Length: 171
Image (cartoon, rainbow, N blue to C red):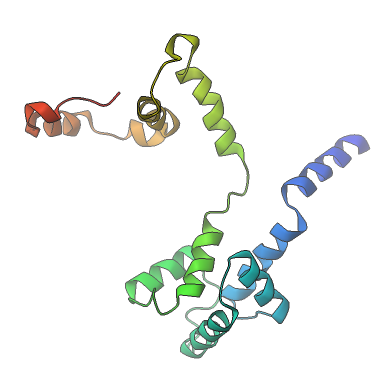
């Protein structure tokens, strides 16, 4: 039992190193307006930010948050709020942290799934396939949930509206 637990803990330690955990907690503190100097240094170094501009933006956002409507919100809320209010360029450093943080993968499982599906598409019989054709075949295969929701009648109607030279399918 103990060797199994040790191997699981080691796997978690490898996947989530201390820097990743520090960045996660730093962004969490940023969203609560509770940043320390160490958090500011970590975020500015990791996301390549201007420290002075980032601190100024945090102070401005904190002052704007008089009714506590912005506290404890997630990254998606913040990005939407910045876009809807037209202040993305004003709070560029803050937005850069949010966008950079929201695309950090938690696991590599989706990448591993894509590579395993690649072996289904690119077989020995399809070795001279171009990159464009491979991408066009992989996209519906990887995004099967989206592909299942496509209405075939809409695709047919779109195909009918196209002029003959545009009807060529990229496969």
